[in-house]
Image (cartoon, rainbow, N blue to C red; front, side, top):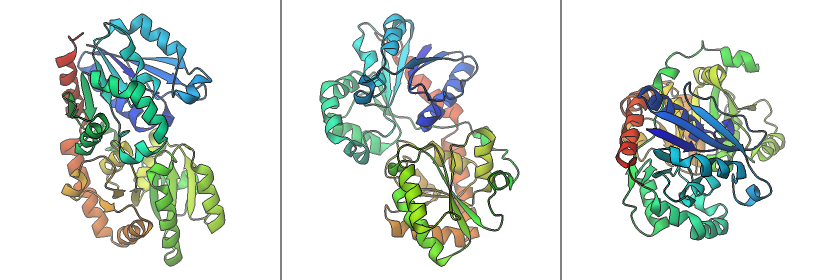
Length: 383
């Protein structure tokens, strides 16, 4: 098969780019051809490209792209010229140009949409009226036409049904996965601390993801501040690109005088990210909304005990396997979780071990990607 992925394939987009990378790696090994069409802003850093794949970067067209996310005349021209050459077009996410443009071409190949959690109640409430209009004009109609809608869990199935008003007949639960081998050999402990001049005698609570309010940072920050009022044995490291929330974080740090307790290190990649995982005592993500958190999956695969909300996209599997400490979406619950985890090394070891077993059995990328590709093969002949 010849597959076209459409996504802003950049470091800033986070999980979807990593998912495309890992799935593409498997697809190439199995003999498929994979291209990636990436409507990107000039300053965006493109995510690494698997050997054998191609990325076509198309500049977003201003001022329209401010109102119609990722709109790109260049990408439209690419699709008009090339879309017929593909067997399957895989659109990642909704509410943007790449999730509707492929549906506007007659006799184009079957389309797949991966929701990535963007129909969650919290996500829908952000820019509600804009999404209502966009949904009425485009998104609902084209979602109905998709030959496959990949969803990660039962919650996403329910969100899709509520949005459309019926159960989509082509919706399939196929969770995302990752290359587990990549996190089996982490750098030596202390490497990350040394790089950023962090003290050696305190625990590290690691947040890793976009600096956005949906990640639960408005819960994590005051919860950790409360923790510092009673304990002096931990620092909070915030690792990730700014997505609009960093000024509020910096204001919070200044107001509470937490410069020595909360450290912003920016986006981490490759060996530096692995070093952060190696040094982390606890991974924290009390998120309001995730389609499927790759950051949480990475932490669990690396053996870092995780403190998470139930909204990270694992459909109850984390609770079932006792693979993380789940918290409610409140400051008090996050605070109590921090106290429990940082005080109890045996508890941390237990949930970390449970998490690694869960990840190995359910989320290995070779198994997950093969499942998705089999679904692609079923629809590839449909025009």
